[in-house]
Image 1 (cartoon, rainbow, N blue to C red):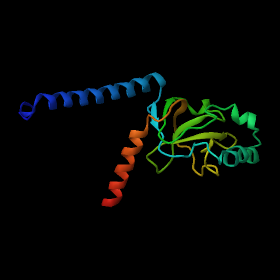
Image 2 (cartoon, one colour; image 1 turned 90 degrees about the horizontal axis):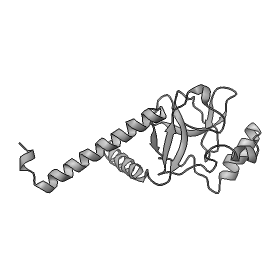
Image 3 (cartoon, rainbow, N blue to C red; image 1 turned 90 degrees about the vertical axis):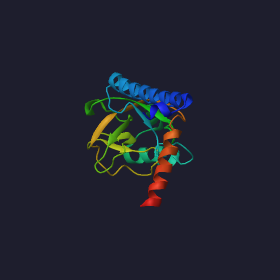
Image 4 (cartoon, rainbow, N blue to C red; image 1 turned 120 degrees about the horizontal axis):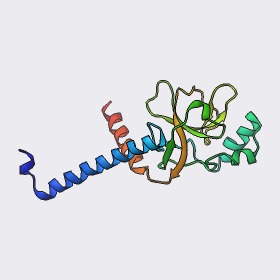
Length: 175
């Protein structure tokens, strides 16, 4: 009944919006099936993997001091230049046995809903991770691995970053 009261332009807008949602869901689930992960696409919402003027100290020198890695070893790892807030990451599912030092993995930790995207820096005592931009190792244990990053699409995730910021701002006002 309410549908008949809408003008044709509004009906077309609603149809287009629903079609867009259906396409996004199809792409997400289709990519998930192809890439063997429940999380095939991730928008970066932090700066923990950014490379900037602190990279020499926080990344190269830290990894050399803590693990003895050379610059050549570190630069041979995937995504050697990190990525930035607002980038979109494409994830390929892997299991724990396939993880290697240098891989950038997407994983869950206990008590946090949002997955973490950090680099594996050691496998000596379980999987140890660190954000390239962070000055210390991650203090938490990897609970569940969704996969590893295989491709970065710059800037495409900014709509999600902006949306999350607005929602967080509103929730902070309310609560």
